[in-house]
Length: 241
Image (cartoon, rainbow, N blue to C red; front, side, top):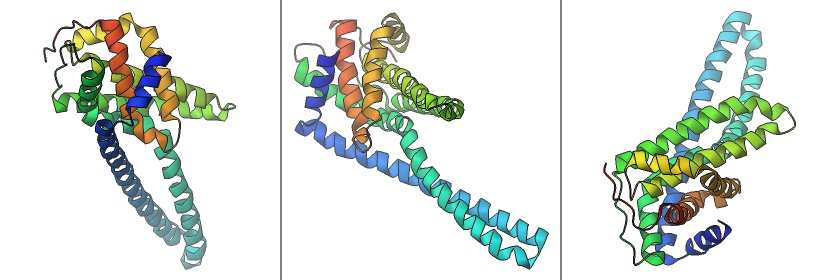
């Protein structure tokens, strides 16, 4: 597994994958920016509505305190959005990765397994559906785990382990479904759950590194293509989607 990870890291900087890297980084940043702006506008609107309600309830003398409190809350919310974008980076990369999974897999297969039959591209809607389900599940798990942050960082451990499980299963399925039907890919993942989870731990470690984690789709897909080749064999069925 460590050898697979090292080879995935080294191939990430090859010219073909480097081009995909810049596109995935751009899409991830655009997605984060769009979500941040939307949340910022929503928070400002809520704070403005709250300030008006306070002034109507307590009179004009409450204008200055209400404005000051609203400003402090908006600053705190801004930091919260930044922190949230970092915490939810696995969810972001899950969605972004679904757009480029096949391009990454094709390059890894072409370079490292030239004698094997190439995989078949998934329909884009199918890949995006998989990424979207993983992202929503990640948000749900993180919301449930957030209260544990109060217990000496126990929530951080939960975040890390949940990220390993979520991203490991998604990227392995994306790699496997290029060669076999979704149901068979799921069975293969469950059969080798421990190995897939170890791969997920490596992906979780990668996604926990700020800035570098923007390249998570490349590392994760390049890794899981190799893992699938080892676990599923090279004479795999073609997808029936």
